[in-house]
Length: 264
Length: 280
Image 1 (cartoon, chains in turn cyan, yellow):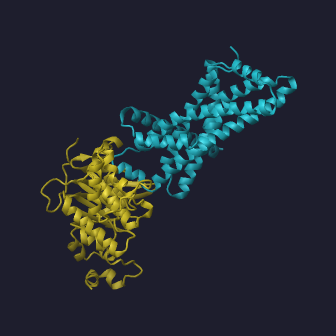
Image 2: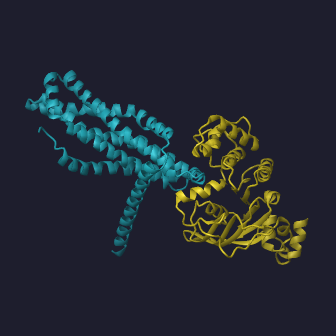
Image 3: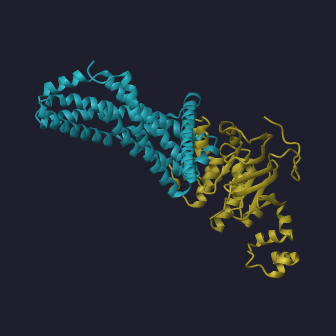
């Protein structure tokens, strides 16, 4: 029994230590953004890596999520004669939940894994020690450009995902399932508001921070060897994905107080 | 900034305070005690070679000297400043004075040779491409790799990587350069060229050098003094000639590359036999 308590205690301490390290990294990063020079060339490289190269993934995710969600909603609502309400359900759901969460999960898989692997490889090949030896702080050089690029790219990617999802939902509902187009749009506009857009984009900014700090931290603390880098990459993707899903619930509950859902 | 410690050993022949001074440095990694109280001094302009068995803590000691590792106890003084406990940002000022060549070169693999060498200049705020190009060309000439600007690290041999790493660490003219196994894994000809390069740098730029190696040919070629690190402490300090003359069986076993299994019993107990064997 005492072994069980020791194991639980050790796990709790590990968890608190891990969270503490993330907070310290975030603190160092924000201090660096304010006090140190920003490397704009690296920032632009990261914008290309995170924002531009994630286009295809985000567009496909948004399109097929919107399409399948519209179809499923139509199949249920049409039985009640509410086919034209599909637009409202699809737009609100994609803006408030599906758009931010699915984009964050896709970005975690594509960008978070790459960040963690790249920084982890730099660590095990002594490139991070070389940076430090050349009087360059790894946070300034590696973390800050990624954090800034994520903060800019994620809301744009989420907005893109939402737009493509709504367009795909319209195409499936009106084009394939023969829902009345003007009613579809009218319902969508009536039930969707600025509050939904703000909520979606606020979540995007929060998820961006979660993904970038978890991924960079895993890379920076990667253990030696190829196994260490592989493990760090896997843990970065798993931790960031879980963090996105868990934080999403709390963000939804909190933001719903500020921006309540539904027709006002 | 603190003053130098009162109790400095002083380096033979050095009139001024040592450039680098280490006192009572201890470090354990996990249960293993790597350093158990290292004391050493390096005078300005001197080349100190630290030799010792593999896994004996030479590279760990070197990383401490530039603040890449923090000791459990002890002091490291660089040009009169104790670097122990300094934050990463404060260490940056020390690291501008002390360059380090890593064992594998530690080149940034996403950058070309030119970008690697120019990295410290760009980080220091140099923006003029002509100045950068001129200094990179000068460094490439020093390391005898003229015209290799656009090569990626993946396309370089081990010796070339070390040369580029060296050029990167000296382009801002540090007053001290640390070399971690500069000839490890290189063929004898390339090793010899690296040894000459280290000597040339010392003459041309008057840098203080600390070289960690277990390549004795290299050590004798470049050292002003040699320290033998054994069981976490400096076991021997002296010149190359003093080391070669030493009858100590431990030192002679190391010099001759002789394990316990291969040493003849009479030599293990009779230092004179060791010396005779070494001379032979």
